Image 1 (cartoon, one colour):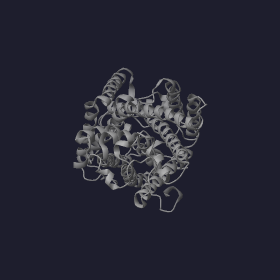
Image 2 (image 1 turned 180 degrees about the vertical axis):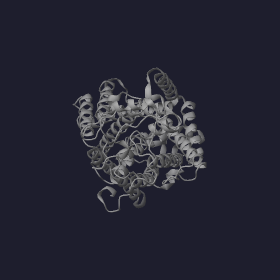
Image 3 (image 1 turned 90 degrees about the vertical axis):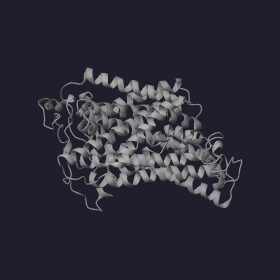
Image 4 (image 1 turned 60 degrees about the horizontal axis):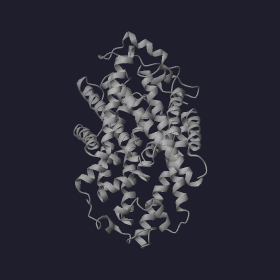
Length: 505
């Protein structure tokens, strides 16, 4: 298995001017070996696709629809376009610097070590929140089939099962995530096709109180039934739905051929996610009045019921269980690799940089397992109606990470022009206008979180979290953690793998 040429030894620390400092030698304690490059285009494409299709679609979409009505389709289009620009910025940096730690190290390199510290730990915080919510959701889903079994048993079982899989080689993780994501994608396509059949042939959708048709998009208060304010309010949930897609950038350090794999994944996955959300919700709101969606059980179950499939509830339950497993699996992977990168920068304990003989940072998996065990306790005390709160806090963390990705990209582009350096092989389009507009939009989303009472607490939690990180950095970070990361510029240096070889497929 090919290994990362950039990870064959600890990255030396660099001073602000880009030269290595004497403190860089202390990084040698952080890493015992290297991460394996075992992820191909199939793994990475479906990983990013699966990470952004899950709870946010199957359950969060109903909350977004209730806030904006049919205008939520516009919200997903705008949000999807912004996320695409984030991914292009991340993709340009990942092709130039295909390293473990991804955007955490990019922020440290181009914005400074404090920015790298805050960005990396905020992403870990985001993954921890979402993962705890997902393991709790998994136990609820299993309760549909096994109501007599205590929920904490399911939580404990799935935590140890996925932790064990993540301790194996990254290729095992990639295969597992591929099949999890494939099941979700097939289910969503089936929902779109089934819903379209109901509309085209005039079937009565299960539980529908009005005839299905495109007219339902405008006949119940118009496209903007709750006005422009409703559209803005929906962004808290809409952006949460896209959260996790940045995991694609983390895979660069373990991609078999990052210069081929990353551009293909970046260019196709966001578009597919956007289409899946817009098409799926467009079909849903054509079948049922928008103000009834989510009030009479799952609308996805109603689609299958309308096609005369009696096992619809069981089919959907199997799909959402797969979605939860995929999300937890991806959360463990993403947080673990960021922790690995933080360790290399001196921003996390050196033990997080130790790698098993399979090329896996095993201590980070152990830590994430410990965090998820909190879900066993919270499973008994957290009410089941806290989705909006969890989504809002996760949205703040996600948007903050995206802003730092965009800011790092802007700093990189300015440095390329100033020095000058070789032009990027995968440049972000419409530079710089699109990048500036996307940063402004992300700032607007954070403002929206504070503008509405039911999401305002996320802003408070986020502000406290960022403050604690700054204090933690000042108190505990020493040595090479106080200087900028030094990343090898691999522009036009990595060989492209010819089409048709196993790694390129």
